[in-house]
Amino acid sequence: MYPDPAYIKTLFIKHANGTITPEETSQLVTFLQQDGNEALLPLPEEMEDIPAPGMDTAATSRILQQLTTLTTPQPATRRGLLSRIVTISAAAAAVAAAIILLYHPAKQRPVLATISTSYGHMKKIMLPDGTTVTLNANSTLQYDSTSWNPGAREVWINGQAFFDVAPDAAGKFMVHAGEQLTVQVLGTRFNIAARAQSIQVVLNSGKVKVENKATALVLQPGEMAYYQATNGQLSRQTADTLQLTGWKDNQKVFRDATLSDIAGFIKEQFGIQVTFATPQLSQLQFTGTTPVNDLDMLLNILTKSLDIRIDKQNNQVMIMLAR
Image (cartoon, rainbow, N blue to C red):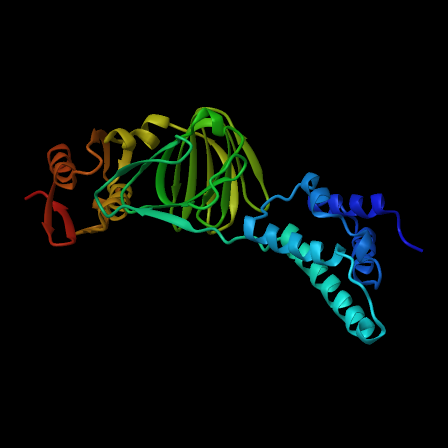
């Protein structure tokens, strides 16, 4: 007993839309593999209203050619009957396989465009949707260069970057910070600092959702999500946005920062190791604003502001007591 042609056509459409059930898929494949059912296959013109996302022209031509071959009546003789049955069965199976591959193609692996900065240098980048990213020194930004489409905007950041997200990307923009956090953008301006020991997400305006495997936080302007690598904890904190994001305007703001903290900044920003002649010097505090990418000026300001002497040679900085 032949299935209703309209029902078979419905199965084709549901297969193309991705709404077909496993039972219906089995029915469709079984139908295609049965001898004598070739006349019931949808004709090429009937395939026109079957949506086929991701179907390229060459693949479309191949499957329609196979369907046309199967639906073209061929006179059968006793001598050629067996070979015709074998041919039809093999062709039907091939069509079934072609349809499965055609409507459910393997997901294309993203081709990531990579933009990096060296020590002491920043870059401003415009992404395909108009989003601007200011990339700080010693940082890397990646984004999918093959499928930058609405609903599929994703970027990866290691280091520090300030995002000014284009309005039309609101709700469709995802940032992966290191390997621990994802930031879902809800139309906003925010800063991410993703380093080995910790990750900070500082919100200047708008709204973002920050999450890891265990916790999800929705930030309001002036708040920061802080992830500590040592314990895997994600917490919400009040943020000094000027201090934490002023770098994008070439201003590094220090507020009661210890020289140990400043040494960490110098290591990240310039790749230079800072050592202290005595441990007590590392706890001296400094408050002020300096250019973010001018190490010599920073060291000069520290020398004049604190009772210290600084010796800089090659990639080493030694801080000592003033003589």
